[in-house]
Length: 75
Image (cartoon, rainbow, N blue to C red):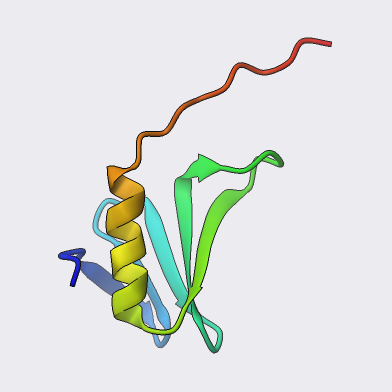
C-alpha cells in the first residue's frame, strides 16, 4: 500500500497534504492532479479506481513519474 496521507474534506472527498491531488468518490474513486494538466488546460484525472487504496497507489505512481513539458506550437 502507498504511504500517501489523505486529509478528509467531507464524505467521499480527500486531498493530499501538499494540495496537489484531490480524491473524490462518485461510485468509483477518481484522482485529480492539480499540477499536471491536459491539452485543454484542465487538471489531469486518473482513474477510476475500485478502492481508496488503489487511488493512493496511483498518487504515489504519479509523484514518481517525471513530467515533461512540451513546447507550445507557434501559429
